[in-house]
Amino acid sequence: MSETLKIRRTAGALGAEIEGVDISRELSDRVIAAIRAALNAHQVIFFRDQQLTPDQQVRFGARFGPLNIHPYVAGMTDHPELMEIIKEPQDKLNFGGGWHSDMSFLERPAIGSILYAVEIPEWGGDTLFASQAAAYEALSPGLKRTLEGLKAVHSANREYSAAGHSAQKRSSMAIAEAEGLAGEYVHPVVLPHPETGRKALYVNPAFTIRFDGWTARESKPLLDFLFQHCRYEAFTCRFQWAKGSVAFWDNRSVWHFALNDYPGQRRHMRRVTVDPWPETMATGAGRRAEAVS
Image 1 (spheres, rainbow, N blue to C red):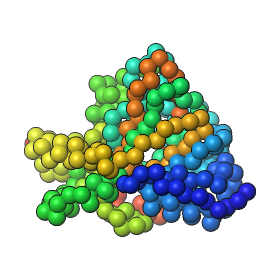
Image 2 (cartoon, rainbow, N blue to C red):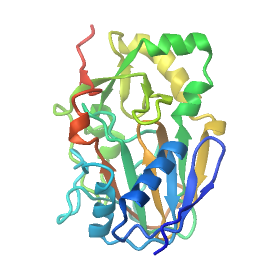
Image 3 (cartoon, rainbow, N blue to C red):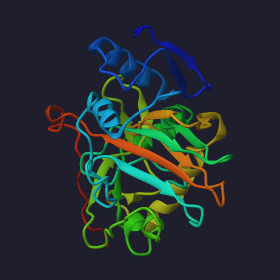
Image 4 (cartoon, rainbow, N blue to C red):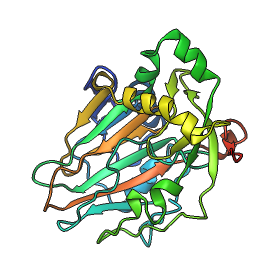
């Protein structure tokens, strides 16, 4: 196998396709380092024409960090860290619809997600991505200074509670309710990337509920502005899936949106989510939020 990667940028703000590598194989440390560098540079990277068994996808993901077991979505029986994301033809809602980043509701959020296309619809089902680094860089100096002094509260309760979007019944996915179980964790609103130092906005329409020390009512106007700003078209790219395609995105600086525009068709994806290495967990972890009346 050639270990010379061909990297082609796909959009101005973020995104690149990588050719010349079969990620189902045992890859050298040099190739893994090159893939990590491409992820750092482009924030989301794509591979085409891959053939991954669950074992192979887990093995590839584990080269970048420990794999997360989702607290509210059941994984595969033999691979609890591997989530099957399935929308059956009769399902109305999809998983991952709406702008968000994965797992920011954890004390130590995931660093990346690796999604593999098992079965795709005849048309539709693309995924949009938005660079939160580009979103931060487009802000005024005054707003940047304000936001760098803020922290935000993230929680899974709104999304995975009984009334939440992801808790609605689906034919092929088991969602556990988080009500009364999920904590509220505080993270910086401006997050420097631990490897590149590039700053990105770290707020999340799915899981950010207020600023730390602010009420939800006080937080809403500024959060609404940021949620609208962060999805501006110039910060985005769009990926059209084919069977065997893989997307690997950095949750610390990227939002994504799984489009639900393929009614009556089946879509089957598999995802592993990469956590930070244990030796990095002593610094940068969030803290539990305090109640605000």
